[in-house]
Image (cartoon, rainbow, N blue to C red; front, side, top):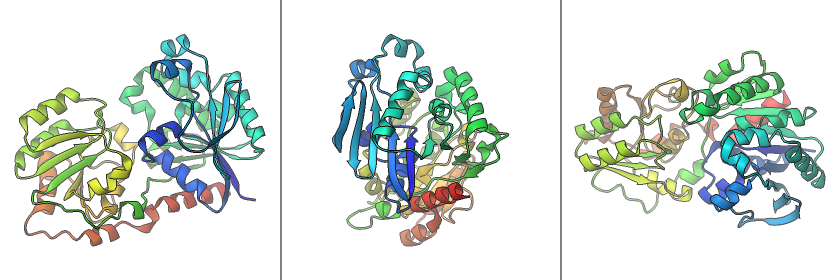
Length: 393
């Protein structure tokens, strides 16, 4: 008998299907379902409200899998004999508009929701399981299933997240519950241990990468103009001023910034207008990302250094290196001791020095050597093996 995993991810299957398996929770899901020690993986999607179905036109069904149960606001989709998705459809409308993000917390404490989850698990014949919660607003599941082995994955510190300020009191309360109730807490950063001062089973599992997915070497040309590239969400952590100044110092280089503009749109527009060598390329499909990164001469991480970035571990760091692309980054968490092909620049002068180092005509960057600099233990397969070892002991 292997492990059964019931997961409430940070995102959900609906988002993964639309945007690709680009996030930590999606990679965990992918690699748990292919691990030989795991029997079944069941994802509990965040309940889909009537407000979201009407106002955001979110669909109930998926392009993959088949619905094997659909009754009274509960649906189960079978992706394969090992993998299932639980969907709960709520008729909440006004409540969602009033509570906004706080609704996530209340819906996972609703007995109506919890009873549907229990019914779904019974329908699937799941009695004992590893309950993996990756969403700080779904901690109500820990109280609902006290007899199960409870794991919390701290992807970053929501207490320091600018977009979560209005629900910080709920987040703090939920972190306190995790501290008391979780049998195992894992995190991308050891810095997050301070959130859970009394829990004695806190383990660091940093992010990883699929080596094969990003190791594309055929049919890609770097071009005559070196491209300095960034991929990821563009939000408060992104240092626009650093980008602007470094672009000024390197007019012969092209800076391509890929990702959704979640904040700083005015700053991005101003830079794009004033600096002809900077282009904000918006979001790119995840399956196209390896080929795009392989056009870079340097991958950059121009993030501000603060409590929030100290709680994170950038996925892009591993993906750049897996593509054979050297990295210039500010000293964000996770950049130390991974590879010799990471240059840390904590100010404009240092960051510029790193870019010039890798783009100099005197420097020959060997992509194969950059790839080899990334240790094998950063693969997602290794991360899941690490999780299973922590569960065993």
